[in-house]
Length: 123
Picture 1 (cartoon, one colour):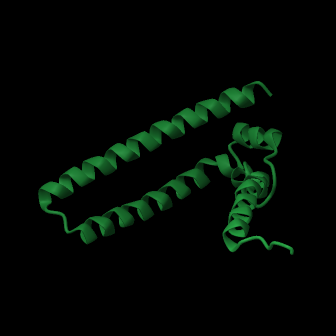
Picture 2 (picture 1 turned 180 degrees about the vertical axis):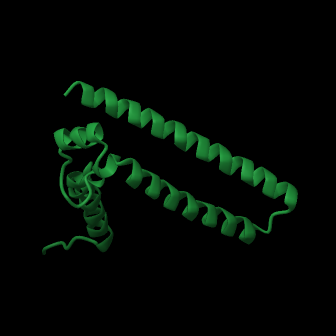
């Protein structure tokens, strides 16, 4: 007489197979998020744009993007404060936290720009 595997045994086999296969299924996606829709960055082209102040590094483009981003974040900040129904004292604290975040972001951007300058100087 042939013994059939129990549903509990089959479930554990399928679960084990799924757990073992999941890292393999996701392995191809690592790192793609930084390259957008156009594949890998062309480092030489990016450094040339930085030196010339064109493309992504154009002062006009950068300033416009930053103003647009800041306006959007200010609106989001205000809407969230309204939803939280903050008192005046709480709103002051909320605004201080927001200001600290902006300062951290600005410092991070300066650090990134210095890193890019160093990277492009070696090319």
